[in-house]
Each structure stands twice: as structure tokens, then as C-alpha cells.
Length: 399
Ligand code: ADP
Image (cartoon, rainbow, N blue to C red; front, side, top):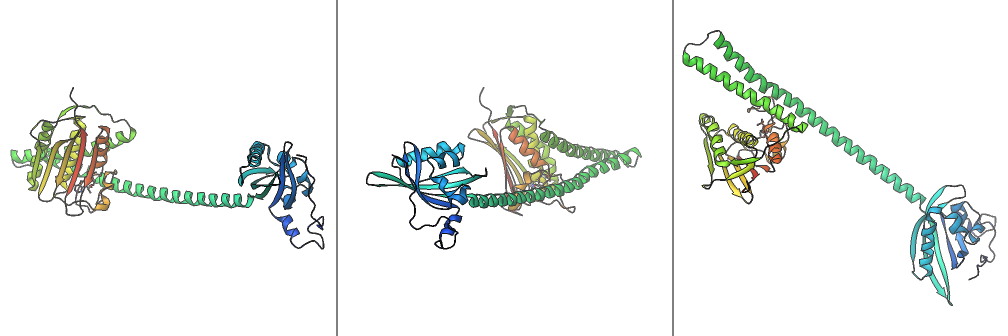
């Protein structure tokens, strides 16, 4: 098909803005886009007519648009040339009503993102492309502005969250330092006190001497536990804690726990029950670490139960051994249940709290249990309703 000359508008003045021009022409010229009628031949894309702001969009003269293939090869950005060519080919092959976004290079070298929409009309065997090209620069700016605004506000929210988090950590650290120094100082003072009495001979009988010695010993053990907790959490955080998984005879372990806490429970007037099923059961665990976890859970149950029962049970559940520690104690507010596994968290962390502790036991237990491939969860219906801790540890598979 032979390229055609631009179809001249009858009576159209050369410049839309000139005196006497139709009132809309100057407006058309300033539009951030233009419409065209064109044909596609073996020689390329050939505009036949155009209306609108080709010149203001591209910086070229309006007549340049009609130079053979000028628009597609000179104005469309080189990287997008192929894309635009395929677009025109698909349109001329009859795929109607199409849309494409690509870049133009203005005469001054600046890139502009445009969107072109095109339909194909056929009349008397001749196909004509009717299209419109419009600048997306303002949309792009608005999108960039809104995304940068969104990004800024997200960043601000993130900074605020981090700030709140850091403040909370700082508050917990302060609380931890106060509580821990109290936890360290109390047994240490007690040890010093009883040893002074013994050293100075301030006892009236051998029985009293034994009592003072036992008290000093008990406080030393307590002190050692607190120090161990602090060392354990540091080891866990440094990633240097490891486990040695072996076959653990659960009944034997339960008996050990029972005998460890028997006296303490009795002194508080609590009933302590430790039961397993009749058939012997075996866990695949690190015995020392499993014992440490159970000691922590039963110790907590006794500590937070003023009267009633503390019950430790174990049974096989699928391929797990399910340990349950249930008490009839003070319970845990429902909104604090998730938090008790975080380190330093104590439901009552105030200076006037009634129960000792560092808030590390459950955090350490959770880490240890997970290192052994198990799971731990705490349940309570709220204050005064008792607490249940469930612990699932893999069963020992037969050799
Ligand atoms: P600690 O006992 O040293 O304070 P833990 O990490 O073992 O630290 O427990 C964290 C907190 O969870 C406790 O301070 C207590 O508030 C709550 N808690 C744990 N076990 C029980 C329980 N059996 N009954 C009531 N509260 C409990």
C-alpha cells in the first residue's frame, strides 16, 4: 500500500493558537496526547490524519508525525520499538481494540511514558488504524508520589513499632535486673547470715547447727539455680546449647521428680500426684534437659498454688509422650498466656510481687523442648482457675 499524504482539514488554520482559529484547536494542541488515523503497509506505520497535542507531547513539529515510519522508528524509544511493532502487526492482523504502554523520547531527549489504544476499522477492503496516544507522566508522578508517601508512612509505622519494642525490652531488662539482683541477693544474704551464725558459734544445739547448715545449703542451691538459668539463656541465645537425645524411661524420671518435690509440696499442704500408664513408656529426649523442664514446670505449679493439688501425668499420644502439669493455683490472665514464654516475663513483675523468680524458666523450657523436637503450651481460664502446661516430646522408636 502506498503511503498517503496527511489529509488536510478543510479551512484549518496552520496554528491553532492563531487569531481566528476555531476555539478548540489551541486546546487540542496542548493536550498531553493525540488521536490519529493510520494505515499499516509493508513499509511500516503511516499516519493519515491526526488531531491533538502531538507537538506538545513529543517536542517535534506536528508535520513530523506524517513522515513515513518517523513516529515508530524515531520517537518511540529504541528499547520499546519491537514491542510497538508487534503491537501494530497484531492489530493489522485483525486483533481489535488493543492497548500498550511504552516510552517516547522527546526531541529534548527526555523520556515520556505513554499509553496507546488502537482499534482497526475495515472499509471497502482497506484497514485503518484509529488510535490515541496519551501521556502517563502525571499518573506516573502521582503513583510515585503516593508510593513514596505510602513508603514513608510504612517506614514511620515500622520505626514506631521498633521504638515501642525497644522501650518494652528496656523496661523488661530493668525489671529483670531488679528482680534478678533480688533473686541473687536474697539467697546470698541468707547463706552469709547462716554461715556467720555457724562461724561465730551462735547456735544452742547440734540440731540448731544442722538447721542453719541446711538453710545455708538450700539457699546455695537456689542461688545456683538462678545462676544456671541466667547462664542457660545466654547459651541458648549464643546458639551454643546442644542436646544429646537418648532413650529416657519416663516412669523413672517421673518418680525422680515426685521425690524431688514431695517435701516442698507437703510443707505447703499441697497434694502432689505423679502418674503414668501401667505400661512402661520411653521418650526420645535429652534426659537432663527434659528433667530441667519438668522441674521448672512442677516447681512453678507448686510455687503458684497456695492450696489444692499439683498433678503430673504422662501418656503416649500418637508418636509423642504427652506430659501434663495441672495445678489448682492462681492461674494466668488469658491475655498474658502467650507472653509467659518470653524471657523476663512475669505476670506480676512488680517490686511488690509475692512470688520469686526471674521470668526465665518458661523461656528456657520452650527452647529446650523445641531443641528436642517437642512442643509446649500453657492453658489457663484466667486468674484463680489454675494452670495446665502440656508438653509433647517424641516417643523413643524401637531399635
Ligand atoms: P519465673 O517462675 O522465674 O517467674 P517462668 O518463666 O517460669 O519464670 O514463668 C513466667 C511467669 O509465668 C511467672 O512469673 C508466672 O507469672 C507465670 N506462671 C508460670 N507458671 C505458672 C503457674 N503454674 N501458675 C501461674 N502462673 C504461672
